[in-house]
Image (tube, rainbow, N blue to C red; front, side, top):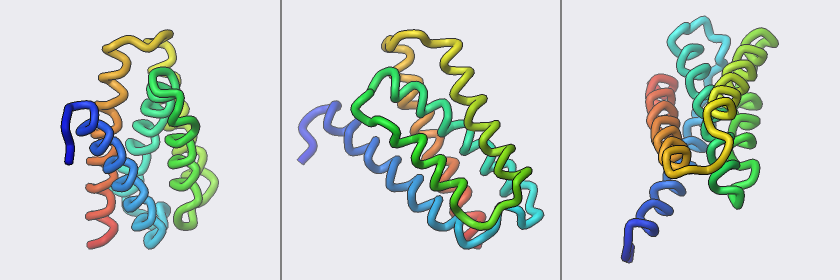
Length: 135
């Protein structure tokens, strides 16, 4: 039973990780180089979001360690992608990370909240991508 908002947040965080993992598993069914610009755009957005979450969660929730970076590595390992696509996704991840690094030097309430927001957005992006790839 969930007794307080901290427990609810923990459950939601775990759910977001599961959703991202599921979407990455689905993405392995279709190559990101499948000439679908919508898929490529969504993969790029997801990579940028993962970069932002990785920085903010490392800053505010160090116990998560390399979780979000590892999710990016899973994304890169999914499907067969050409080097330009791979480089573009890495660039998106790094840009998301760098934007947050420039904006947040210490963990503040705003930084923690933004990390949570990006985690939710990433989960939504992953669900949207999974639906697109699953259709």
